[in-house]
Length: 355
Picture 1 (cartoon, helix red, strand yellow):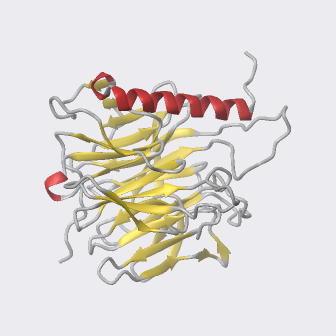
Picture 2: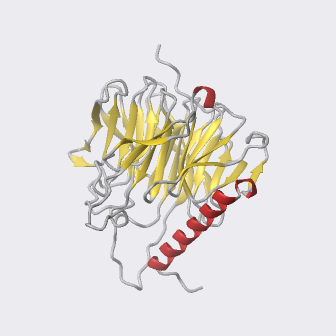
């Protein structure tokens, strides 16, 4: 079969995403839901909440104030006004009660993944493409932000992507590179751990291109998405050269008490299609994974062993996050330029309150 050029593949991807978005907006009830384990609440529908992003929404997470926060990633080659000014990236805040969405922070440092620690602080992974390439902690009471990981062994990170936190307060983040003009400064695309004393450790180097990360509720497993689309920036390739995808898989690692991780097994292999992006766990340890397979885009719920339990069709998604408190059974989804939600029967996993 004749290969499709990179520009043509990009146009096809955009066309598919727009088509899926139109379907989602017009007929939520017709979107395909396959539920083998009673995961989706009876009669639940996918609800469109926001569609004002520039290119890609990401990293939805529930704050301790009851608000939902998510990133708006503004690709510098697309989000440009008529005077050549580039949108600087934004973090939006959605109010579940009023359904109003406002900008929480801009510029965002090209924020991607967002999580909240047990104290209610916001943790943000800032990427490349005029971004900070660092991990930021924001005190939501004072509004002050702190850089908690800016370099490793004297070099900037490649493009911090996603975040997860264990019950000891240690922070884990992935550092791939998908886009941006900056140099790729780390010798590997790895996963790092920030200990409570502030020290930074590279703990995974064998995942290919790491993306979504998640610590299991029992603290014994570390789940990691490998999504290698072949890109590390805005390459200008000859017409006869295409990007070659690498590993596309959901991986499981054994997580030791000291925060080290050892490869356990491949839970799901998506090759030759695109793999997932972000993921999150419910209180029972089931995984909700944003799968970017264009032939079957959506949120797939897996058991801890990798068995598919449910599938919720969406436009090509990026990430997921449970609400908090009264919304602990609501799954929020970032996909395309939008934010969605759907009611489930399972509670989202939350870090226990500090003692």
